[in-house]
Every structure is written in structure tokens, then in C-alpha cells.
Length: 112
Length: 115
Image (cartoon, rainbow over the protein chains, first blue to last red):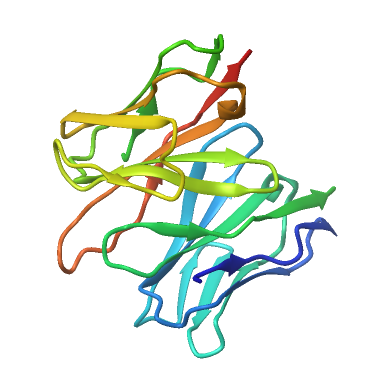
């Protein structure tokens, strides 16, 4: 069964700290992996998408990596800010068709 | 700018009512999706559509149906709402094609309460 797991479920850090969010997936035949941000009561905002042929993607203070052989992806956030507080979800696509399998998310709190 | 809109942010309905949730995208995307999100269960796919008048069941289609009469609009229908359908409903869309990158774009969500 294809599953996506995110640990920890919640994380609290002081402002300015660099941090890493983890995502693991059970099937290495991944097509692409997408990271999202969700603010409370809101929809999902796409942050980064890594195709299976890529190893990482960067956008501003965010860097996402993909290691298919180990079944892992990480989202690195540099110099965290209180505005980064949100739930971060990763989702794996296995079939070319757009269906995503989501992790449960990591709720991040950045304290001023 | 990419935009997916949903007809209501909050909705309260009674048990047994027929409920329509509407989703519209302005990006000419072929693929559209309906998810529900519940604490502890994450996002689960209800139905999706690859083209007009086409639909496929996701992981939890029971109690739901969908309609896609136009490319930009994808409707989720609760035929007879029940309390266990109280949830946050999220619509998404993506492009299609053999070499496409299927980045999904989400709407703001509809929080449905069935009493």
C-alpha cells in the first residue's frame, strides 16, 4: 500500500532558527512530490514540486529535496519567521494522472 | 494568477438535505479533484475528473456524486447529507498531458456542517 508519513506531527521553534520537515513514502516509484502550506481554516498553497528526475527545488527561503532510494523528502526552511507558522503537508504522486497521496502534515509554530 | 474558487466558505445543512458544492477554476485545467479533510485522517480523495463529463471514484466516494458539464466547473453532490459528512471540503485542479507536471492548485475550502 502506498503511504506517506510526516513526523513529527507538531514542531515549535524560536524565530530565526533553520529547520527541516520530514516526509517519507513507502513506494520509491514516485512520479513527483509536492509540498503544501495550509493556514488554519484555509485551503492549501503549493510551495514546491519536485519531479522524480530532480533531487531538489528552491524557492526563496525554502528548499525541498527528494531521495527516491530512501523514500524520503525534506523541506528546509531557513531563518524561520512567525509568519511561517502553519501546517505543512507533503503529497506523493505515483501515477501520471494527478492523484496525490497526502501525509498527515506537520504543524509548525515559530515563536517570536 | 492561478485561481480556484469554491461557492461557499461555510455551509450548514440539515440531515437528509441534498447539498451542492461548486468549484470553478480559471486556468483551463483538464483535471479536477474533490477532497475532504478531517482531523487525524488527513486529506482523502472523493472523486476526480480528467475531462468534461468524465469522472472517477477516489478513495471514499460513498454518499457522494459529482458533475462536470463544463471544463471549468466541478460540482460535488451529497445526495442525502448525513452528520458523518461534516467536514472541510477542498477542490483542486491541475493540467494534463503526457509530459505535464501535475502541480495541483487548491481552492479555499468549504467547511460543511450537517446537523
